[in-house]
Image 1 (cartoon, rainbow, N blue to C red):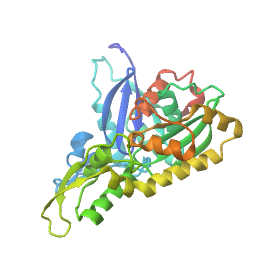
Image 2: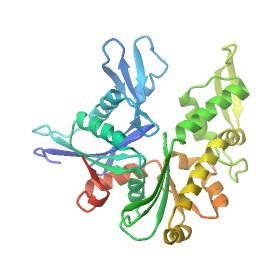
Image 3: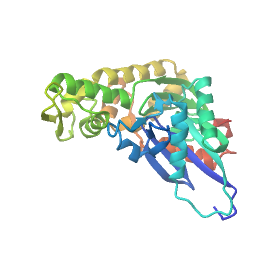
Image 4: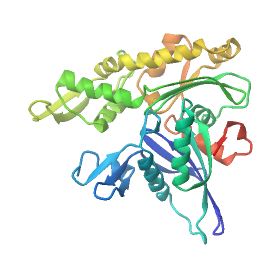
Length: 341
C-alpha cells in the first residue's frame, strides 16, 4: 500500500481459541483470542499472548476474557476491545492519512441472524468501514484450494476451538450444513476432568491444551504413537506437587465420547447429502481442517469407521484464515460467497 492509500484491507479468522489476521496476502497477526481487562476502570491491559499469560495471575487487579464461546461472540464489549487490540498489532506502514478498514470476517455456518448481527456490530465498532462475512466451511474450502464454484460435491469438517463445522458444498453453495458445540474446548474439558478423577491433579485449560497437542489421540492403537508426556500439577486434595506420566492411550479413552459425537454428526450430514453429491464425496474423500484435525489417529479412525477416505488439510490451522484472505483479495469474483454488512 502507498502513502496515499485510503483503504486498509484485512481478513480475520475470528476463532474461539485463536484469531488470525491476514493483510497484503500474509499472516500479520496470530494470537490467542483473549483480552485482559483492568478491574478498576474496565480498560484493556493486554491482548493475545500477553493476555493469555495473565490467566490466573493478578486476579486482584485484572480479569481475562475469552470473548467467543462455541464459535460466536459471548462478550460483545470484550470482543470489540480484542479486535481493536489485535488490529493494532498489525505491522504498520507509514501513511499520510489514517485509512478506512475493509474487512472480511469468517463466521460459523450455524450462526443465527442475531449472532451474525453481533459479529457485524463488534467489527464495525472496532473500526470496519466496509464489512463482509464468509462462512467458515467455505473459507476452509477456498484455503485448501478447492474449486468452490464447481459442481462436484465437497465435504469439509472444520474442528475448531468452540465448534465443529461440517458442510457439503457444490456450485458455490452450502447444500448440507451442521454445526455442533463439540470441538477443541470440549476435548480440553475432557482432559481436565480425566486428570482430576484419575490422577487427583488440578490442571488449567492451557495445560489441558498442551496435553491434547502432545498425546491427544482418537485411537488407542496408533502405528506411530507419541511419547508419554510428564505433567506437573497440584494434588487436588493436599495441594502438594504431583508428577504424572500421561499416555496417548488414556487420553484417547477420555476423549472417546466427544470423538464419537463428532463421528455421529458427520454420519448425520452424510445422511442428508443428495445422492449425486454423496458419490462425489466417496470418490474424492472428506477433508479435515482446524486444530482438531491434528489429533493423532483421527483421520485413520474416521476412514475406517465410514469407509470413506479422510484427508487432513496441508495446513489445517490456517486453512480458514487463508481462505478468508482469498475472499478479501477476490471480493468481486467471489461475491456469491460473501454476506455484506
